[in-house]
Image (tube, rainbow, N blue to C red):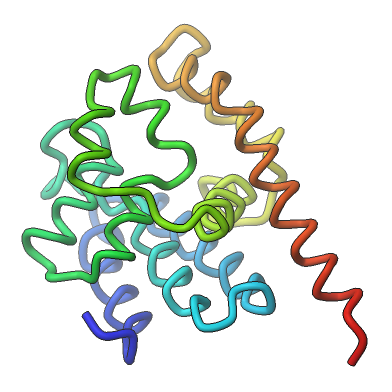
Length: 190
């Protein structure tokens, strides 16, 4: 998939997979993409790529795609095997929001990393920032409240609850790195 028209393609695909069966997940994805647009000043030529990955990051929850029950892997495989997406979009979806930690807890880390090598760290940070600063309904939040919401929704003793608590320091690190990059851009003279 060429980058020309990438976001239009991504929105259309994500909407077709999420809007009807999972409207709340679709609203979340739209909110994550909105956060991604706000990061354009630090992304340069990768701004469109991040927005596309942001709107697509949760397509693996779609009932039509869920195969393993691990949505980053299911979504990335669909993008590769069915949608013909570019490698960078697939890698960002596969590894969004510290997915390697959840993959490890599910016994899927080797599979995830062998099929989808990680994307550049600054883009992984940016996508994590966008996801963890967006509520399930698509509105802005902060990563501490988002982690608490996820742990509360799934239960502290669930696989997801334990994963999100384990990932919390890295999520906060991603957020801090993105905010520092934004601050550095704002400090630059015109």
